[in-house]
Image (cartoon, rainbow, N blue to C red):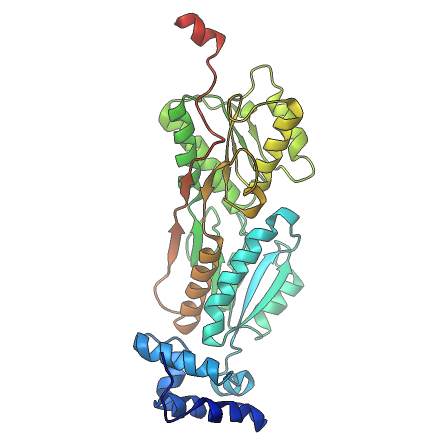
Length: 363
């Protein structure tokens, strides 16, 4: 899309040489539009035509226009910023997820001139958490890694500050959230493994206090029940961390009657399962099928390629930020609670189980 001829590149670049910042009136004059239309386009209002919005954004980029956030916040009583609350302790293997998620949040906020403040806190209502919620430095909060019973959700609801959760508590009433339908994703994977002939399917997961962990295990249990496969608690390992995952998996695979398939509820657990198999000389998938939640860079180059329950981490960030910005604009609007269904992607790490002696005797 070309800029209007009446405002050429020489003049627009001259603004920078003159040492003064580009104003919204400069953008409006260059685009041949009113300042009001330009303002509405840059702030994401839905009543601006797509072509007009694209023109305004292009002109703003060429002119290197940036909103005066201080002036706007004084005029609107808004901070023009949102807060993103992520776990206080970030595991190294989770970095890929957060990089993608944060990139999605930023991609939604930046075109609207909204700054992003990232804070790492504990899972309690700490002094730092209260200060962020009540300090008027942000217009809303995006709360991540929600616990099954999370006091922070109730606290934010009592403060009147717009907020959105990425994740859910067990009691899901009264607050907006976006979450991955972990139960549906895991159920699809377990049903696929059962369809291959597996009945001894192990489940390895992280701290069950996290909402996502609770729902993923629920999907595992539900799929077994629907298929009439007995639930064996000896095949379940939860609360695993990077420090103990490989050892726990080696113990699991060394049982007198080991599993023929494993579902790993986090990417680092899938990698740990592969490492345990290598140590014990277990062949994947001939001796053991492996399926993992999240198709992250951590497992992208593992051989054989792992079957996964895949989610778009960047899109999750985009949708979460979009819901929060809508909530800030309309705090009393409809309560939105959205589940995004992940996709099962089958690869070379899953196949039919080896026939047992009992199977061969029955032939």
